[in-house]
Image (tube, rainbow, N blue to C red; front, side, top):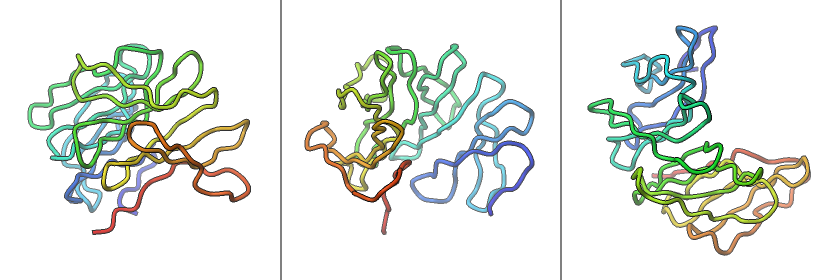
Amino acid sequence: VLYRRKRKTLAPGWAPDGRNMIATLSLHGNPDLFLMDNRGNILQQLTKNEGVNVSASYSRDGKRIVFVSDRSGKPQLYLMDLASKNVQRLTFTNLENTDPFWSPKEDLIVYTSLIYGIYQICTIKPDPNAPPTQLTKDLTNNEQPSWSPDGNQIVFSKRIGGIYKIYVMLKNGSFERQLFSYPGSQSYPQWARIP
């Protein structure tokens, strides 16, 4: 256990060098982003009372993060420059955008977007003027995307009925296939990163 408090603590996004992480803590009631070291010590508060702030993911150079905030009323993706703490809204289309994950190999962010009532996997460049690219287009809910270490594939959860199954596809959305045939539900996939 790196950090233990009675208030809500949500899963961290690790820096590329593994020395720091950014986690959501409710220290003062509002869920905000905090920079922490790899021993769980708080180094800095990054957001303050501007909606719920969660799901931070580092850029490949460790200088920026993408995160989710509902400060505009609905969950959307935001970019933060860690040196200046300047924040820019990244997504402007669709009602809800969540689950961002920055590619380890290029400036491309994969995320979940609510499109016509169905969750789909999209990618976007870290530029507020960049249009998103929708990768999944079926009538099932596709959520919780994560990049492969080489940045060429995306693993995600597909909800079929009330059951989640793990799927993978190429970064352009092609060659989608189910990974496992285990009974029951599988969700929140993360690709192992072996040095």
